[in-house]
Amino acid sequence: MKAIQVGLLGIGTVGSGTFAVLQRNQEEIRRRAGRGIEITMVADLDTARAKALVGEHVQVVGDARAVIANPDIEVVIELIGGYGIARTLVLEAIAAGKHVVTANKALLAVHGTEIFQAAADKGVMVAFEAAVAGGIPIIKALREGLTANRIQWIAGIINGTTNFILSEMRDKGLDFDAALKDAQRLGYAEADPTFDIEGVDAAHKATLMSAIAFGIPVQFDKAHVEGITQLAATDIKYAEQLGYRIKLLGFTKRREGNELTSSPAVRGVELRVHPTLVPAKRLIANVEGAMNAVVVNGDAVGTTLYYGKGAGAEPTASAVIADLVDVARLATSDPQHRVPHLAFQPGAMRDVSVLPMDEIVTSYYLRLTVADEAGVLARVATILADAGISVDALLQREADEVGGEGSTQTDLIILTHEAREGAMNGALTQLQALPTVLAPIVRIRKEELN
Ligand SMILES: NC(=O)c1ccc[n+]([C@@H]2O[C@H](COP(=O)([O-])OP(=O)(O)OC[C@H]3O[C@@H](n4cnc5c(N)ncnc54)[C@H](O)[C@@H]3O)[C@@H](O)[C@H]2O)c1
Ligand SMILES: N[C@@H](CCO)C(=O)O
Ligand code: NA
Image (cartoon, rainbow, N blue to C red):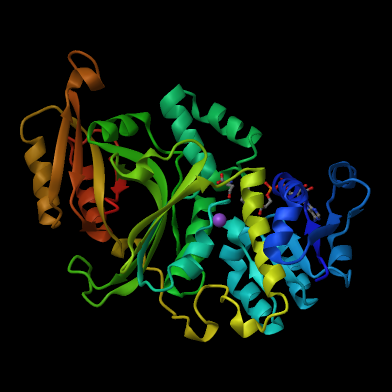
């Protein structure tokens, strides 16, 4: 069978990794795919750099549309990134009848519904393994390996940059900015690194996993997004003393009524990214550096864990090329026989909404800086009890650890059992209003991940 011709849009970190791995392993890949896979045309704004990377046998152009217009190109790899020109080019490639492989989670989390619909109408594939957890085949696992299951929840360390920063800060005592610069130098960070540190990139990926796991449309606009910029070293330390690690988790969960919710009939999906306390004994709590890990809980299989490199040139290329092999194998197949883009047949998707944050149910870590005087603890306990929130553990750090000798402040660290976020918000407002609470209360959510 004739080699499949591929056009590459954007030869930066991931693009150059893809080109290199495809060249290096071409024979092995051909044996698997049943036909050769050749990048015959590359578009990049920096044509000189692109030419230096690919050599003289590959056509290099500055205009990506020239690739889409080439009738010999059957597959377009989009590795430009962002929601702007990438969206236009992907839609134009689909309209031209090309299959698309992309690592662009931002694009799919926001415009996935439009893009997958366009692809279905045209009978082409849009493959995106590289978009979630880079080289880890998590899309494959969710869409194919776990199809027997009702998936209950997914929790993932799905941003290498922030996990790298948290690890460097804890292990090497590096400051935030130095750790971020290293992550950028190593090619992990997004073009706009605020997407990493503010949790947006993880939310893009969690949105895609949520859609695939539950058969719902992508709903990035409803995701709760919190990054690591407000995280204090004090809380990392206290969490460790209580047997927990703090990780930036992407979390999504199916919810079908719960005695803690405001309505027993509540149905929906939780979709949230925030720093999270995870028991130190869980494998995922020990995922360090730029590594990613995703825990998936299915009703039949139980809890499963997927671990590996979620960023960087060749790990991400590994996923891009796996998609190319799928496309090469399936290009001539009846579109009805392919794995649906979001794992569920388009006509079988459910219009289930992402729940507002007030309705989520989780447990909490609270840190209150309080006046060191009689009765404070009792007042705090009463407010929590009145809100229906029960305390699981309590740690009090003496004044000398907080404010030095003679200090009149103390830190109260409280772990709660599960509560509805709306109830917790009400209790926090009351606690914050107490004259004996001397600083803004820190609240970090906690997941046991059983
Ligand atoms: N870097 C990673 O580890 C990683 C991992 C997973 C997914 N991703 C995703 O992969 C995509 C690419 O990321 P990257 O890190 O390789 O980015 P990058 O900035 O290194 O590369 C982008 C390339 O696109 C080129 N480009 C920009 N506009 C263009 C245009 N209009 N036409 C043609 N070329 C254009 C740039 O010149 C650059 O060479 C993004 O969607 C990113 O989110 C990256
Ligand atoms: N910026 C992303 C790249 C991989 O998607 C990360 O740090 O994980
Ligand atoms: Na992946």
